[in-house]
Length: 313
Length: 97
Image (cartoon, helix red, strand yellow):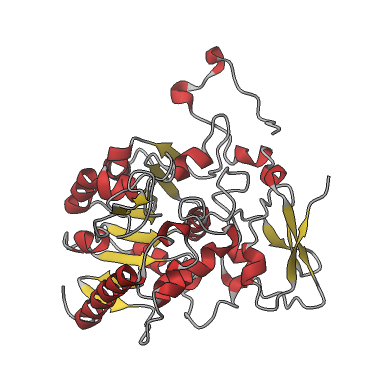
């Protein structure tokens, strides 16, 4: 667990742990970056982990009865209480260890959910778990809509995206609200560690997961997960789109450690937004004026983030 | 699709319908979904392992000879390995009946 990677290159791939905790045979769609992210996170967290998973894609693909793709203890709970269950597991373990019923050792408790289970339905239990200071990690796999039930909009869907409940048409540009900034809401809870990560940058992700596991107290990870089915794109593009999202500034990678913000992947010259949107069918209807409006907003947010770097939030 | 794990009767269910065999999804061979398969050209392969870490199925592994190959029981044929390979030594080949 203690080895740290220098973020020099992706070619040290042999340093990644080989053992899988989320095994082949799960029913994710072709090219699912969310399954890729789950696989990476849990091969890094290792064996002594207990997972509480909210309803969502990762629940239905990994546990269609009588199969399970998990080799660590895993429990499926409702949309709204993944963080509450994870905090209860953590509290139960700590009291059992205190009473000497089970041996003292570090068992990492992980709560996980999609963006719907985190930003919309599970926000109150997540906020409570973070505020109470349980020693756990909460991971949000953000694929920007309710993909599991058929691509309905969530509060994490970006402006202009066409989904089945915010369809694009002559009177609608698709989603008409901006994406909710969950990592900053979590940073507002003054928890020791908040980070955004992407499976397209595996070493950056590995380092953040290790930091989150090491930290005493709650940690929150927001992982960007491309969804080829819901975003209407080719299944082999998922990793490239994740990279473009970072390079265009749509999803900047940063971490907030003890309240101090640090951008972990610097992009001084952002790429034009069109390179990111042109591969995705959900943005196909947008005209140049709307794209420029989005680009201005993205740039604005990115510059704001740069100004806050190194300052205590 | 073949489901090798038998579905238990209601009277045989564990408490809370818990599943007691970890990783039992391995019995389901999702490779049946595939319409094209990745083929490695070992002459160009530099054994960097980028395909190994970017496979969403986790089905690519280094073989005994040092070169990575996909386990075709599980490979769904998404093609991420082809896009990410820095030496373009992987190509997709259509499956035939």
